[in-house]
Image (cartoon, rainbow, N blue to C red; front, side, top):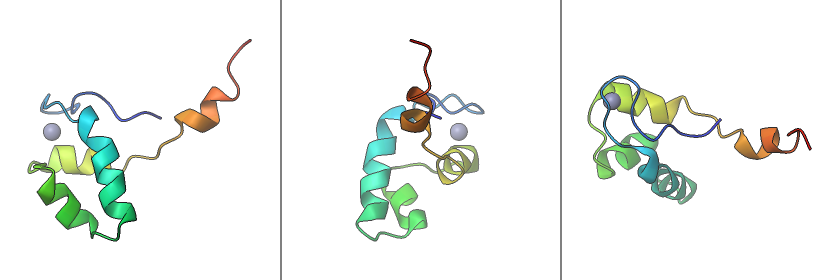
Length: 65
Ligand SMILES: [Zn+2]
């Protein structure tokens, strides 16, 4: 859905890094390097980014009027 503001496991604030991560990946940076560049060192935060699928724009179309 939306990237969580904080990592579920360790509590590190990560929400603000999502856009930068997407831009780096779109520019062709390997995901590993993008995560390293953003300072996401723990595997809980890294898994959050690697497993995330952005669905908010799809779901928002079906909101109750
Ligand atoms: Zn974490």
